[in-house]
Image (cartoon, rainbow, N blue to C red; front, side, top):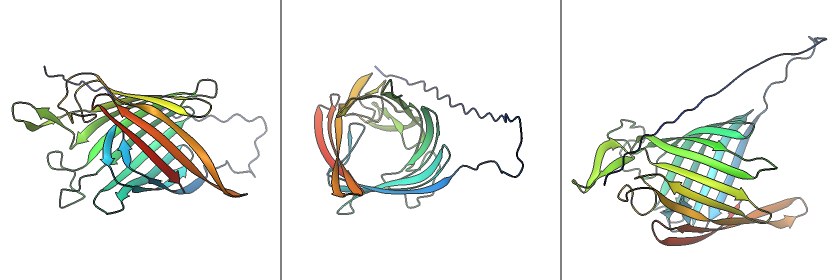
Length: 249
């Protein structure tokens, strides 16, 4: 039985500005959002993403971003030590209190001769929109909804035994909960899609990613430490399990 996804992605940005002042001070200009550059690098024993294998080899994953107020515009990448796998993902995100919205441009195949080919029928790119609740101090529960809306994410056609030209709208929903020493997470896909064992070939709702992660800071000097992270991933849909160790510098 074929399962159709009706993906409703509603993204609302509310901006409101009000000035309340009993005694205006014209000599003091309004404060401007501070702009910072963010540069980090993760080194991981293998690259696992939402229960699927990006690359089984050790990967270097740099991030370069500009952060201003609640906005962040950056590029995330990944490549293995043999340079046999590479990924480049520009993204734009906005955080408002405990909520975050974003759009990401994924490309991990690079089969097209031109990186800048964005024609829906031929592009390697996949555009995804996301909406997240980041949790609070009293409720350390996070929820994220992620839907691929354009590009190379196509429906699997059983009659053709191949991919059709129809958009698949692969959706991934993850719940996370922060405990004292580790975080637990549960990722599901509501219908046919990219995730798990099927790449669109498995029907229906499925749990495709669950596990736990823990971080320990390795002290290098009194003023410098390196986070060491360990994560166990289990994909019940694909009947697979992974263990990944990584550091951030």
